[in-house]
Amino acid sequence: MIASRREWLWVLLSGMLTTILWTLAAGKEIGWDVIHHHIYLPFSFLSGRFATDLFAANTQSFQNPLGYIPFYLMVDANWPAWSIGVALASIHALCVWPLWRIAMRLWPLPEQWVIRGLAVFAGWQAPIFLINAGSSSTDPFSALLVLTALALALMPGSHYLRSLLAGMLMGLAFAIKPSNAIFLLAGLAMTLWRLTIGKIGSWRDLSFQSAGCVTAAVLVGGPWAIWLYESYGSPLFPIFNNIFRSPYAPIEAASDLRFMPERLSDLIIRLFDFASFRTYVHTEGFAPDIRPLVLAISALLAVMFWLPRVISRPSLLRQSLGSDTALLAVFIISSYIVWLLISGNSRYAIALFMLCGILLVRALDFVLPRPWSMVIAFGVIILQAAFFGADGDYRYIGRPWNARPFLDIEVPSRLVEEPMLHLSIGTPSMAGVAPYFARDGAFINVIGPLSLPTNGPLGRLLEQRLKIWKGKTRFLIRGSYKSFSNPNDTKRYRFDRIAYRFGLRFDWSDCVEIRIHLNPQEELQGGDPAQLLSCAAKPREQDDPAYADSLAMAERVFKVAESQCPRILGPTPMATDADLGAWQRRYLSSNARLTLSETEGLLMSHFRSPRLVRLGSAEDVLAGRGKSACVAWNELGVK
Image 1 (cartoon, rainbow, N blue to C red):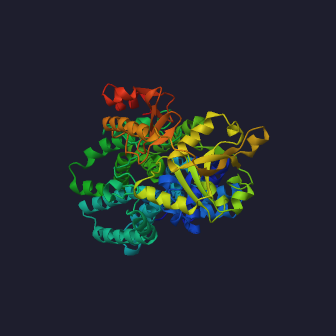
Image 2: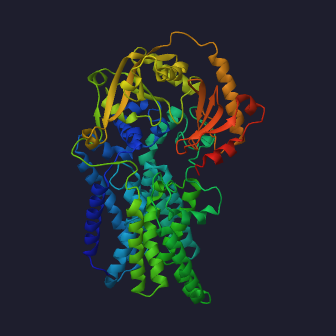
Image 3: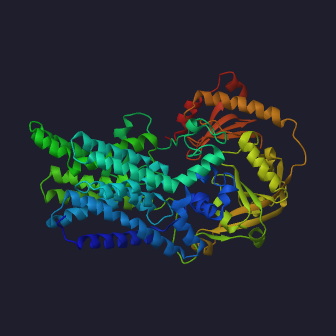
């Protein structure tokens, strides 16, 4: 490297300043993941509650909590919210350093600093990075680990310590979040590419990278995986349970279908989707990104220009295929294919989208003479900024920064002083409030994305905890006391019906409110804080003789619908939930919901669709005369 030694410092400082300013302007990310598991996971790990709680954050309860610990420690220390945002943004901003190191490999001359800067900025402005920068998500930190590992792997020559460190960073990223396996596979593909073109030392690099990766993954993720195996029979519980077949989760494969392609052609179509003005294309918000499409077009033109020059010159062809540009392209293409086939959620591929900016500028520089390549690259950067800046979601659920605690929760003193078991009902689980209750209490999300059964191995674990906390059990639901104040309101009967299968009912005379102050400015203008209601649980007073027969009939109806469309209505839920005059099932893979109503028949719904599609009466469905579940799913228009 012969560029200015001071350049890296300027890049790092400007990247940190820009990221911090962006974070302060975009606001605090206070989406449901924060209250669902970002705070609960590190709390449960540090307090030991992970061993006594049960599905507190539902299926998210079993993520490795280590990546969330820095955020939790700042929250637990009552840092002002804005200072937590600045601290997180400073860490996430470090991504610009490996981006710059990669750019240095592609443009090593001192006079090329302008185009290097354009490339780094084009990577930094990835919308999915900006949405998550300065937030409690571990994904930007994972991106930092992956990008640094890639920058080390692209350095010239073969050095065992560098290869070992690159592998360890990849292993650490995987241990923190298994979704980073896509980059492990992409790194492997890049190393194998080197081997196919005869790069000296690649076998040694692969060996040390593999050793480093395994070592870091075992040291960081091993203890947690061992605990999961000992407690639930699977080191990756509850994912891949079709392989490990733990009795504490559905044994069918569960995949998040929200952003996964349905056809191989979607690998190409998705590039156009990225640039479209639609929500829920590659993440939960609106994040238009024209860079992948421009990259694909520029790369195709670059190959068309490059191929005639080298096709008849084997030595030049081999040299080109072994260049850093080619290796970067192999990494990006490999990770893109694997990512889209197993997830398609760009939150899990921030590093990929940041690298797209680097390769985009490189492809333009290959196709066009300089300074035209820089002019076009600058134009793409401006256009992307306009696309995202005009109407993009800067946060999934954003709130203004302030000097109050990051999660400002008002909890009655009784819940702080008296240890109790809280059974939360709903999605999300609201497990993030557990640290604000008595620390030696307990928390279970009995009804959520995966509703807990009352039979089988998991049902026995639930029964054990209910016995331990008998007389000290409370329900936690969303809502205010005012909304449940009318004794004759059907909402009370609805929740008692939901609690029936646990042998419990609500004691509406013993309810207290928990207030979550998400936006104090709105409250000053008359807005209400988010409210939860903690109500005592007491044994139900009488049995419903028709309950069992009605449940059995409902499960037969659900089974017919599930057999019609197993990809959408899967995996099979472990429990069926009661409601007022209805039965319900929620499905992990698609977030679809089936409701069997006494009056309306079988209905399919989804939280992102305003429609409610009727499949037919229970009799019609059982007789095969009802609407197909797959047809109903298509009519919802979710995808």
